Image 1 (cartoon, one colour):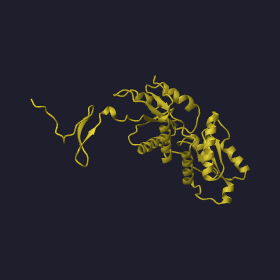
Image 2 (cartoon, one colour):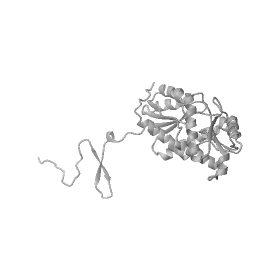
Image 3 (cartoon, helix red, strand yellow):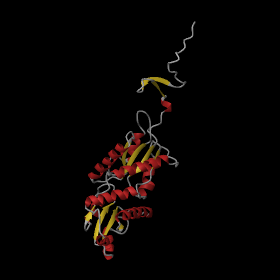
Image 4 (cartoon, helix red, strand yellow):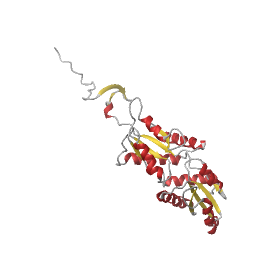
Length: 288
């Protein structure tokens, strides 16, 4: 018998590789590595919204999710709420743990919350720990320069002047209107964002709160008036429209900006927090 040997000009497939008839521009065959060598899919991203009775809130967070998908094609992006809106976070995580191919995982939860507080410290980790998937919880969105950029843009949209002379600057100020929390770290995070926004605007930015913390927006207005600041805008430091955002905007003596919403910088910030958590060496929360 004569051994069957490949011709010298035929491609030889290394052990463990399968040759597929794919060609490049030269017409030569290229070898495709087996599936086990391909890079695994990145963890799914779950946006964690607070939830609101205002229907505009759900529309807003869905639009933000779409913007995140557009910036990172191929990344699985899901939505879950802490309360009031469907899908609730436990339901989203349960669905990811019960797919025909088995549990999806791990996943990264990105809170659409602007600072530390009870939801970030307790509620979201507890829901993640009880879920049938391995999960990692990212840091809240704030403080961060991308938030200050979004706030600045929303103020410009509302009528804040792009340029301001010295006289106008000396009588102007901004109230950063936030939801409020009894957690001192939450207030510290809000003050951090206020400092970042003040650096962009060149005028004082005073935090004020809709509930659970002081000062209120009326108190902040009186404090600024006592300092000769009568031209005051309210910057809405809320992810989406809702009762608190509306109440704070109604107090504005001059102009009030829209909530942060689905701004492009917000989508970039979500992905930044996702990437930070994905790269973290902190252990994931084990599934229940």
